[in-house]
Length: 127
Image 1 (cartoon, rainbow, N blue to C red):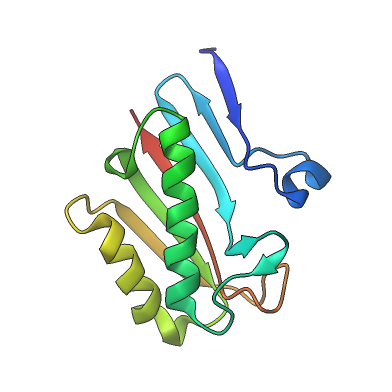
Image 2 (cartoon, helix red, strand yellow):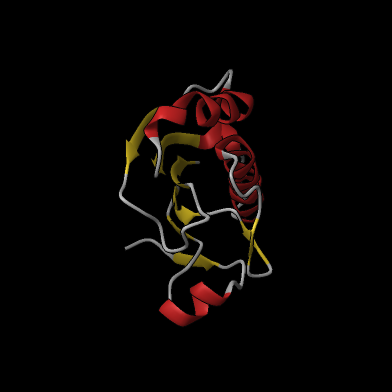
């Protein structure tokens, strides 16, 4: 197997559950489900757009740490607690991926780990 490199944003959940924000193996980078939380507080409560935008900013930073960029993203997966607000999440997605156009999935889930969280996003990238 190619060298494995783990990347962390040192959130409480990463340490509690023992997972990495992203894992790079060879030229593949998998970014874990990411939510809009900063210092234990939900960012953009009530706004799927603001949460999505904040999440993509976190993802962009971790990809940069891994040596690539949003241009390397080939797939996004968005989980939301309210699919009727898909356009808000889609607008944030378009702001980051307008010219990249990765394969994308958006599904509604019953709930996320905190009731104020409306969106969770994960991505796959290839360098």
